Length: 365
Ligand code: M6R
Image 1 (tube, protein in one colour):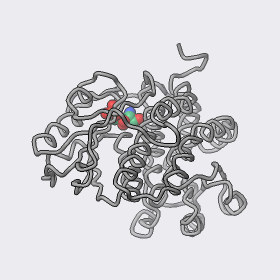
Image 2 (cartoon, helix red, strand yellow; image 1 turned 135 degrees about the horizontal axis):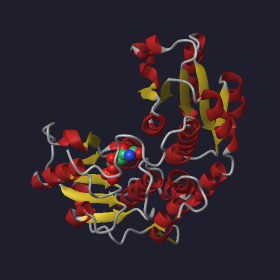
Image 3 (cartoon, helix red, strand yellow; image 1 turned 90 degrees about the horizontal axis):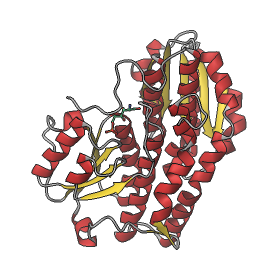
Image 4 (cartoon, rainbow, N blue to C red; image 1 turned 90 degrees about the vertical axis):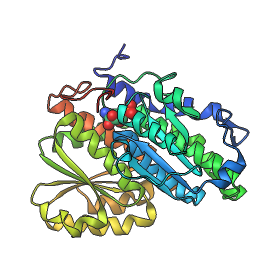
């Protein structure tokens, strides 16, 4: 049942290209995104004044990436809220609000409760769910299913990736309907989306290097993930993956925040994972890398192939991914992050599929 692999998590990491493909291909027709299952009209869209993303854990991290993606494509403000906070933050919800509820299981109690509150306040609910017929799916106005298939490992991988895929579809679909994207830009992005599974596949072909890096760093006890913008959103997910299954303390920071406190924690041997996929911000990230290296940190860097040489000259361990439009970076950058967490946990002898104190679906508050 583990497809010949030692752990479900590894199997599910490997299944990601297929899961992404299964999620996007039925919704791409003749170079267009078609979302038959969404009943929101053009008029409803034009009336939207804000989007709320409501989710927990990794699904919340998809929301963090979604903010960058959807605000860029739609120019509508996107608020990302932890489901457990939503009911206590006096959310500004009206009938012009669309609540995007993201959940693999469709049963997370905090997410469900927040969704009900958003509905009570008048929001329209669009959920992104993996489990067909789950409570969140049933109670939503519209559902976009992620076709990841059953996810067994507690640490989510393929569900996260398919949730992102749905965000791309949704962003492109809404942007097109609202006329907020030029025809050329739209076609270019749809084509990039179509080729994303193949790029993910290419990254998964080269796991040895990541395994080797894990063997160098698995004994570290403090890891910081730094990035800017969408790279920061991926850092949050990378950090959660690592702490969840390897029990190593880790945190993610927006790289520009280092100077405002975190840098005091950097000392000889601290591990920093620098996410520099967004080409425009590469130099900025590299200056952060120099700052942490000067204080003794070991640095793993990740960037697009066009920056391979520069990256290799500045970091201790470099990983590269194929070049993509920045909005698709999370889908590619997350793969080395997942594999790194996996191999580190493996080398530390952890119970990878069932980490201590955690449940696959959190149905109590
Ligand atoms: O089923 P959900 O997407 O609602 O679950 C949300 C979180 O509990 C979940 O993403 C959790 O953070 C994962 N174990 C992370 O790998």
